[in-house]
Length: 358
Image (tube, rainbow, N blue to C red):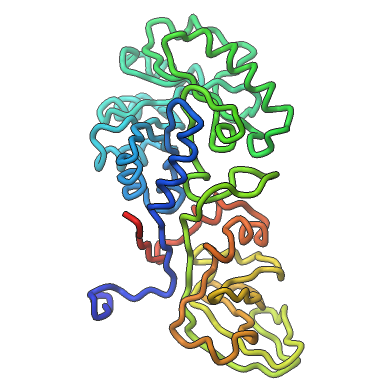
């Protein structure tokens, strides 16, 4: 059985993600302009936008360094990028994975003594060392750190991760910078990497910046307006229109009741596509410049919208913006009680991905 196709030979979709590669390039340039060397974090399929296209675009901007989370992500990326520097943040999980990293020319981020032991057989091959400067997630503890255990290893990069960079005034940032610099000085021939998107844009850039959410248009700051261009636009089609009388419930569990006669548009998007089931009653989508309230409970495949303000203007098959230029992704994330990172990485496989500005 084959999928139905339209006149152009494409499979029609009810949900589409448009990725503006021109905006992606602009965002990379903005972050790169404040740093010495800027890497791109492309884990989780480039935050759901498609790692192959994102890396291809950024390579043309001169980006040569990319970070992934896992060995499998690194292997997939290496298959389409023969000469990029690819760092694996999780490091090896056993001796076999260490060997696989060598085979695929991937640079492990070594996080603890056990991983260092697994890498000893490959110690002449470049590796990165992660130092925990206070986040207590991954990395060698800065308090007991000894550079001597790395004697004979080819350490090309020393990195740590800022816990509170989205709030530049947070005192944790200053403490982590000081701790990192004390360790960084022990590896004079290695590149240092501490700043993420927010760190670089707030003046903490040095060595290699690891740019993540800012590349994809999310706000890297919790306390400032978003300085980045919109890259991801998520839209869904109207698949049903109905007029509902006053006093009628809408959706599962009858959590919403119409206060007056309401023009309801049903969109072909739901939590199976990544639109969170738990969005608040403040949630909005956009039809043109019109912000329309989400009503009723989000279901697996469908979403109810109060389209009364656009009346008969809205029609079956029309595209409605879930987030993008009119509804910011961080705004949608806030309604869902989450962050833009999660919205992007949760986008489902049936969301059609289209690219513009290449």
